[in-house]
Length: 395
Image 1 (cartoon, rainbow, N blue to C red):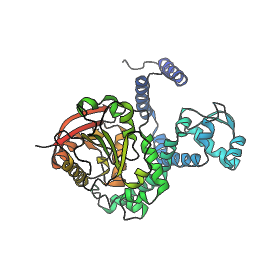
Image 2: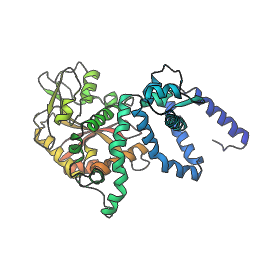
Image 3: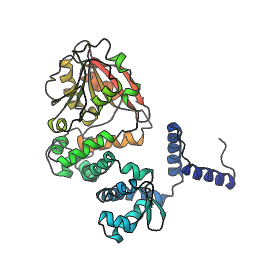
Image 4: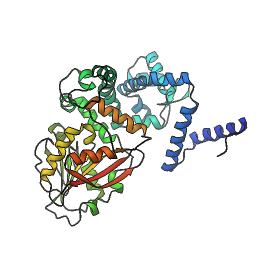
């Protein structure tokens, strides 16, 4: 495309972009292209002073969103059928001081979390409605209450290790931040409210995005000629059973048993999924379900350094037969140009768990060390590199 040659052409483009804010295309692919290009444009035209302000004050957005959740502001506006609410009405509903509430609402409007159609009047926009979703609200609580404290201690932690890459799950910024010797997940089990928010957030985190079952040919790759008495699918460390539910919903005609495994606190919160068996299991111990067609690990490997992943994989290898495969559902980072979401998850895993997101080369190396080979890789979300890695024991 030729460069803009006149101020009039730029003005015309701005007018068209402004129109798009009021008439958003329905097509998801078009919306994504618009998002990507406007993000690039924002960074290209942003003055240095604005850049510094944005970076420095980003934690404040999470903080005020947390307060807004406590006051149920997002829910109140989202449930008001598209009508605006004034500060007085919101103050009565939230029992908050009117002056304080207005300051919070002004900030929420300034950062796009709510809309401000008139003086002292606020209404839900698309972001408000998203933040009112219980799973996303749980994500705000989890990230403010647990993750943010960890990130604040990351500089101190890395200085103390002379900037070595973390490789010990019991010695991370998390332990420093929360003054504990416990592994992050064991600590979470002592915090039932925080653990519940974490589970809700993990269920909602990828809502609306492409699911692995949308693209991966599970029936052909895994379930060929499966018998009713066989174990079809074991979701190892599967939390509350979201993926078991997805499988039963997507492919309800498939015979074979579907098993959810996790530690007791997660199993106690398991979803009521017809046909799903839920059992308590620690994946560092012997796998009790032998000869399953698929042992599925979703976002498990990225929680751990290589040595721990090898232990988990070898425990599964002991239970596998000639028909078994391991399905690793995780990111594969590209050689360059990693999506910002992938990069931030990588560092979040490092800070809390000494875990990591991995490149294709790193996955191949890890599986080789554990005694496996990669049979197939199927990427179902190209932006983040979300992929199913089909792995089998080396002969």
